[in-house]
Image (cartoon, rainbow, N blue to C red; front, side, top):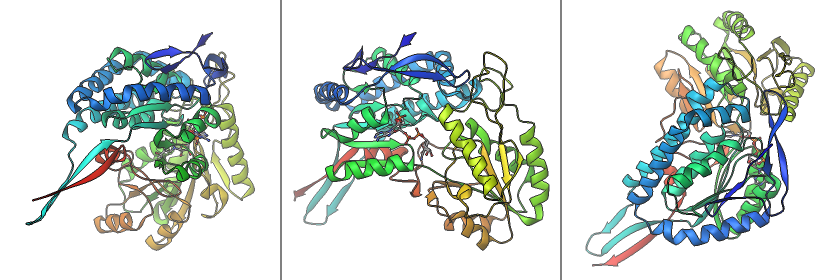
Length: 480
Ligand code: NDP
């Protein structure tokens, strides 16, 4: 069986402790490779390699770094099929999704920041007759990037690309559940001519390798995407060391549908925003609020369409949903379906596992699930489930739906469906979210700020925000 290796100092090496953990294929439930169970000793090696590389990498011109990052982006593109298959196999997502979303987006992330750095500028503040202030933006040094399993390479590259473009050296850890494309990324970085030690990729568990990255005194910033509980722990650990922190955390996003929406477009987008990637996207709209005038019509058509949605093995071209990422996660999501029933909800469709024929009989498949009849403040409607489970709730007025939408601890994204322009702007202004889509979902421009409010995170990724995060401003004053 294949054993993945860490990528440290430009070489692929075994973990210092010699320990490995099993990596499961969600589509079959079988182990298909082993990954290093790295710990603090591996982080130490990676930091040493990064320290050596830092003067070389930060000393290069932006144009030189840009060229290497463009080559890296082209290197992923050239191996597109391999990356797509690896992502789908590791995560359980349909091949078509990995081919249309995950890997092309990772290519774009590297390309975007490779070119953005050439245009990145800093400010000057002249004081008439006195002198001038100018701001230097220097890289931070060595930074840590830790990412989750739901969009593995997509989110990994969203952090690594700006960090590298700005001149930092990186110690990165993908989720232990989906390590494979991060492993391939090491090969592409080496082949793109990235100097040894600039990008170091460690595999292993959050509590060991991840924790050691967060605690290492020479790692100056942590860019983290994952669950709110983990984010809270990282903030508690890193704050006394005065590390810069970017935390992209959980969500419980409202999808608000008014009577006057374009019903057809709303319906097809709502099917995606509810269940894309098996509902395992932090931006999925898991709380659907529908205005009373169209509630029954919406419910009938939505449930019928969800019921007809094909759940199948990721290689099946007809699959709209593939496998859930892991057995524990599948069990967690199923436990929320039980909770919803205890809380008085009615399961209108789904809520059960899908049994597929061999070799997929051990896979983690779940029917997309729609639940109604729950109060907006019950646990099912307040806690992040992160699976193909949505609730539908009727409402009458804007005030009522705003109150329900803003009632959770989260504030990542929101979607609003209406053809009333004034209402759309009014709602967007009042809703607690870092990202609002009006009559759309998951349309992303890489220049825009990305992140959440409340327990959904601290800081913003994307565009200049990311390049500012990965640099330290220094003001210099010169007297006339
Ligand atoms: P986790 O918080 O469990 O893990 C995220 C990453 O952190 C993994 O690499 C994990 O390693 C690592 N980790 C775990 N514990 C620690 C620790 N103590 N110190 C350092 N690193 C640690 O999240 P999931 O992987 O389960 O991802 C799902 C979550 O991510 C959901 O809550 C979702 O909303 C959120 N998310 C947020 C997004 C956003 O942009 N706001 C986007 C996508 C997802 P390991 O895998 O080994 O445990």
